[in-house]
Length: 335
Image (cartoon, rainbow, N blue to C red; front, side, top):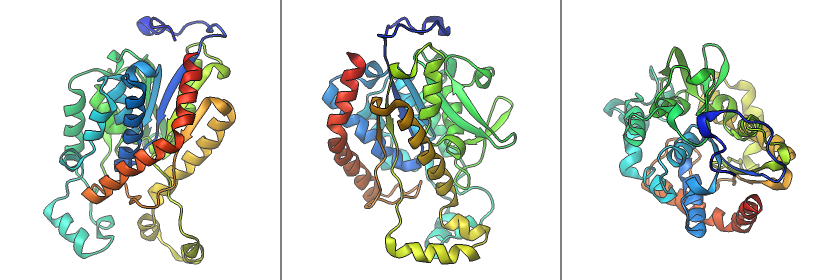
């Protein structure tokens, strides 16, 4: 793609048929984003170049927005992004008060019963500020799309670095990242401009379709779009538990649904639908990576050293599994 394609952030006419655009889309998934970051770190090492120079357009939801923004706005290499998921950094986000820490250890699922969100959100806000400073979202030079959800109006909020209604208030990058990752139950809503927003995973946990639409705005047709779409893993219950869930779900109240992963079910549901549609549209021009999680905790906030170690190991393993497909797709997009 030409370097001057997005000069002055103007939408241009339809691109020549020989021109291609390589997109990177990253799902939400809390601390499991470490797996996605590790996959990208492996890819970057093999390519011998910063991923900022590899991809032309980006999209991210929740933890995926943090990764995508670090590439597009900060031009961080992927190994540096991995470091921001390790205990000394992740603990800034996932810090419980003494009371909540005690209740979590002594009474299973008690945090669902306590007033307010599990975490104050102050640490996450500070984390985002440390990463992005005072940079404005519209000042990002490459096109990037970040999703959040306006729970007051029941609409998806889509932030585009090249303009649109969501960026009219000229938000800071850290504000957009903070809003996109404000998962209900875990964190309180975040105000951006005049709007109160929560995690974009509620409506677009996999933002790849949004990114395809964004590419259309720049004159690309579907056959010119190539995409790497990285998820944060999916939960697959063991067969022995199917009957348990099927029978007991009839008796679950709201609290029981929450403790059995209601939020995660919402996110997984729209993710699988998007998987199907994006693959149907792009066919061989998309590499979708979203493995089943067997040996890591599916919870969004498990930042224990053991789980982080397992996530990194899984990321390296999954990269090797998809290595040939990834490199072939990138070569085709650059040809």
